[in-house]
Image (cartoon, rainbow, N blue to C red; front, side, top):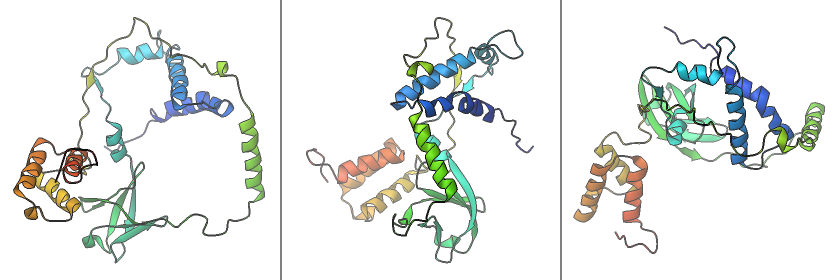
Length: 271
């Protein structure tokens, strides 16, 4: 069955945007922690309001109707960044490159001239490519964007000038912090109920966080060192084998290899 949106996710976002976010334009939070505290206080107040159909609050209705196996756990921020990607169907150039906003990416040579699906990262500059149910990547930019201030700026229109004046006036408007609720986050009290949480299942389709096999990890290490592993000393090869056996996490593997082959000044590691 085709997935259908019922607006269950969009409605809470719209509620927060219309009822709470507008206050930030009148009194801007000084820090990120202060903004989060205001948001938490608003959410606690909003969810404690009566349910529109049931004789209890919204939060009580939500807690009483949890799935029997528990709610799904959240993934790490690093994993969320890899999931947050925007697809776009594009044709790869004959030079195996695709360009967006002046930034060029060089993909697999076999994809030259093919129509593929590009997965642009929303929180990073890595690019993944999908073609005929096969995934490639990550690919990093091979050329920088066009430098800023290289071309002359266009003269602002009357509408743009009016928008600038409105923005200037909006910054001058302010509300006392008491209108939003500066202070400590409200305490829920002794009625807090422990919820059952299912662990997050990481499918890792692009192997962004971990190497698929130890061989893939060794290929990445050889590329980082810019020399075949066969030319290393037996002690160095043994260290790499031990690292690949202990973990396949990309960041951990490359950190241990970097600390071993290129130690920072003042450390005891040596090549």
